[in-house]
Amino acid sequence: MAIKEIKLQASGNSSSAILPKPMLDHLHLGQHDTVFAVEVEGGILLTPYDPTFREAMAIADEGMRMYRNAYRELAGK
Image (cartoon, rainbow, N blue to C red; front, top):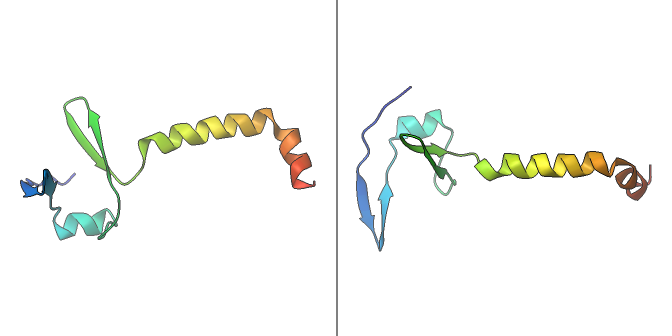
């Protein structure tokens, strides 16, 4: 695990952080990519994955299983 000190900089009425290029390369991130800041016990987790997406997909999967026959009929199969 790489540990880098990153200082916050003023950016309008907010603050911004600049990630070092080696870290961006390792995480396959580039300009205009979105990352999510998730508060976790003991700090903040920066991740390119939307933490709510997994929950939404689990709900969708449950609905698809529950109404499987209706979806098949709508699909014409």
